[in-house]
Length: 272
Image (cartoon, rainbow, N blue to C red; front, side, top):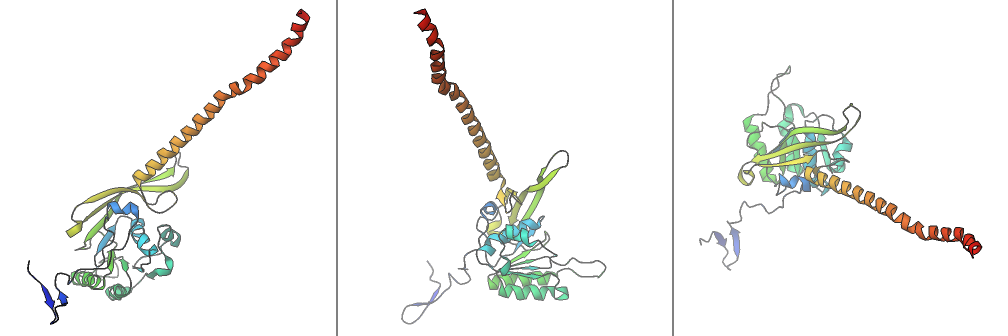
């Protein structure tokens, strides 16, 4: 095997080229429900694009934020603080830059130097203001900045060239509203797909509740299993109630026999 290390005069290793450029920082964690599409979590130095659901973006941020990571949202409008907290986002470690203006690229680059995850909503080209979108050169520079700083760049768009992982939420359907239109929206089932390159080249897909009943994210299968368990528990309780009802006559039988004996005692005495 070829020795690719540089040794000092005393024989100790000065530079081991086999480990140069290899990241030793562990990936940032994600919620258990998201491991079906992000089995290795959020790899530091990567670009992970999200589209189709702002709730999906908050869910991806949530566990890492709760675990101590600093996050930033750039270019987003008002976001419900309560919803962010339900997904685990720690508001004390969340930076908000809602309107970076013409310095969008500069703001994102500066945040990549300082925080762990930078989620961005890229400016759209055109419009009345004649704004231009993100130039391809800026996309490459921001990706390189994320790699050099062990940060995660998270564009909220399906059109970010060169993303290492692309997460897309599809087929959303809400529960909680009855056929007559009454009720309250409680949970939404979506299909999340992950595609990418390198380690993420294998396509993955998972059905998720986003949000789940009660908030947060959960796998659709897990929720279905919980509902089935609840139904079985209700059936067991019903069976227990029926069993109690079946035992009731047996419990009353001795008292009834005693009552009958007392009733016929005078008749027996007269007959005697």
